[in-house]
Structures are given as C-alpha cells and as structure tokens.
Length: 525
Image (cartoon, rainbow, N blue to C red; front, top):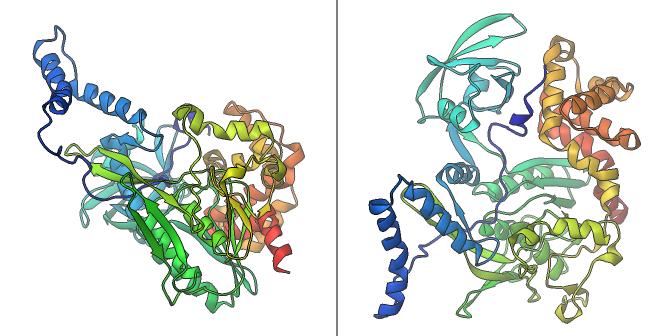
C-alpha cells in the first residue's frame, strides 16, 4: 500500500519546538498626546475601513490585516512573528503539554485514517483500539474516502473532556468492523522522549522541546535514573528548538549549585534581570554532558550556556543555532497571536549567542547551508568565531559569543548521520510510515516476538533495508544508501522496536552506536 506523498509528514500531534515566552500585553497605550503618532497609527484602520466600505469588489479585509501584521513584524527580527488561529491552537496545546482527544497517532493511508499507535494511558488504549485499526466513522461522520485535511480530522476526534464518541473501525487482523465507544480525556504530549541507563552508572535524558510539563518530566526521569544507579548524566537537546525559557532555567537549576548564575536578560531600557540557581538540585555533582547540534536553539542554548560558563559539564556536538532573543506573546480575540522580541538573553559570562540577522529572514534561516559549505559541520577548525567576543569561564576556559554555543568536544556531521545526512532521513516521518506498513502486512508475525528476538532477526537480513529503498523510490526519493547500510538498518530496527515495544526501546537501539554517546563514553572513562 502506498501512502499519498501529500500527507508526508503528518502525525497526530506533531512535536513542536519553538522559542516562546507567554506573558503580558504588548500593545501599550501611547504616552502623552502625540497627535502625529496617533495619526500614523490610525492610517491602517482608516484604510481597512475605506476598502471594506468602498472598494469595487468584495475583499476579505481580515486577510489584509493579517498580511499587514506579518509584513510589519518581518521588518523587526526573525523571531517576531504573527501566528494565525489554526497554528496557534495547535502550538498552545503542544506547549501546554497535553490536549483533550482520543489519544492516537495516525496518518492517512489510501484516504483512510489509520492508527499508527495509541498513546500510552490514553482513551483509545484503554478502550482497546489497536495499531493498524482504520477509523471509518466518528459517531455518524464518515472519515474515509474524503481526502480530509489534518485540521478537519483533528476537529472530528477532539472535543470536550468527558464527551463520548463512538468509533466505527475496521480491524484488518479480524477482517471485521467494530464499534467502540470511548470518552475523550486529557492526553499527555511528552516533551521528554526517554530517560534510560546507557550503562550501570550513566543516565541519559532526551528532551524534544521545553513545554509547561518539561521540568517535571525531567525531574521524574532524573530521579528514576538515580534510583537505578546513575552517577553521570547526559542531557540530549539535539534538534530541540526551544520553548519556555523558565522551564530551561528550572532544569539548569537541577544541575547547578546554589547562587550560580543561570542566565540574565536585558530589555530596550537597559533593565537587567538575573536568574540564579537555588539549593537542592537533584544533580549538582557528578559528570554532566550536554549534547547539542545546529538545530539546538533558544532554551536549549540557555542550558548549554549555563553549564559551559559555570564549568559544570562538557558540551558535545556541533555549534548550536544561535538564538539569544526573548519573546512575549499577545493573543487576539480571533485566536491568533503575535510573538514580539522584548529582550536579549546572556549566558553567565555575559555572552550574547544571538547570530546576525542583518541580511534578512531568509538568509537567517538558511544559515545551515552556509555551515555545510564552509565545512564547519565537518571540522571544528572551520567554525568562525569573533575574537572580539571572547569571554572567560571561572576556570579560565575561553568561550565565544556572537552566534551559538561552540561545543567543548566536536562531533562531525558524517559521524552521526553518514553521507548526505542519511541519519536525518532515518529520523523522519517516512521511516515511521514504512515500518507501519511492513507491520501492517502481517502483524501476527511480530506480535509474539520479544525485543531481543526482533533485534536478532532483523540484524541478520538485508530484506528490510532493500524494501525500504524500494519504498523511498516509489515515493520519489532515490538515495544511495549502501555506504550507510548499517546506520539505516539500525534506525529501521529501532523504529520497529518503537512501534512494537515503545519509545525507550527505540533509544536503547539507536544510542548504542551514536557518535556523540561514544564520545561521552570515552571522556567518562
């Protein structure tokens, strides 16, 4: 069965990593009686009214306002943005850390809502929904054969807490339709993907974004690892684009000692706010490693900067993204919002790690291409640092401002992701879809396998590797994967393990050969 490429990459609730600070209103009233300023500000309202009342054709003036707001913000900085209602509601739920719904991951397979996996402890899991089930109807609403967009599907499956919905599903393994009634409930969206032991004394925590629940998830994971014997800790914020600043601060407080500076901010009036660690953190001693890459941004960089500048641990990876701006959000009545940059943040030594945006937003967000071309993703010596932005840590280590966190220990791109970034492909949604479809062909073949049996069975054959290449080719993506066969097979096995046994098993497999983890092991020993 071939999924429509139009739906790549759709998962039920995509994990979003954004640099956000929710807070007070931004639209402060003007001070004094400046009639010239007021006249300028009235221009937009008068123009919209003029178009609405007099323009010869019908025009959606709401869309004109949205466009005007977007254009205004584009003149400021890359992180001052307008978020339309459709996106804002999803972002708000993701950053809240939960939503009300039926609790499934799904995608559209041949115009049918197909369950990839139920969310742990969610309504669907409790009601007996299974991977591979096709949802045909939600109450009497037909969901198949209609080419519904994802937003429309969400609205059919979400609802008020406690509200009932009757799902008509087709279960392929039984070749029959079933009706299952369930009550919608609060479903957690995890921001900590894994908390696992890498060896008897080394714990590992993977954070995918900084949401309202992240600090609590982190603390729970950390305490579990300590009970299992963790004396050293890896915090992985690779590909974590940020989120709530205060949650990053809470996590930094867990690993820094009392009164150590975590971060400080400065606004346009020069007001400085400093945040210090408190006593009683759960991991203030012991070896600490922070994993970063070119997609680690904002709140991720606050943790990395605080650890590096306080000489608390070792930063491993590649230069981080370079976002040192703080946003505050203003919500509008229609459900949209504006995020406006209201301050810059600085690491404990006084560094601003914000990279330049003087050449515009497009150039700013395409900087990865420049890093690729100038070689810095392959050699640490190719990283360009500004000698005028040199700072010293308490122990005398030199660190630099002006564009991201430069790691203490460098790991080149190809060591992690192979030629042409194959590793990035193997962490993308099409891999999940391919594995799901393989499982869907004959679930009985896998349902009695234990984790060790699965790993052994798949490791001894190239069948799945070859099938995956064919799957990519059918969907218009032809890549030379032979050089990175072992990497591809490792991620395929890991994804099978994730869908059959859960997230923890995925990381147990992937991390065994992870280049940055190998660096950690070498340093620790």
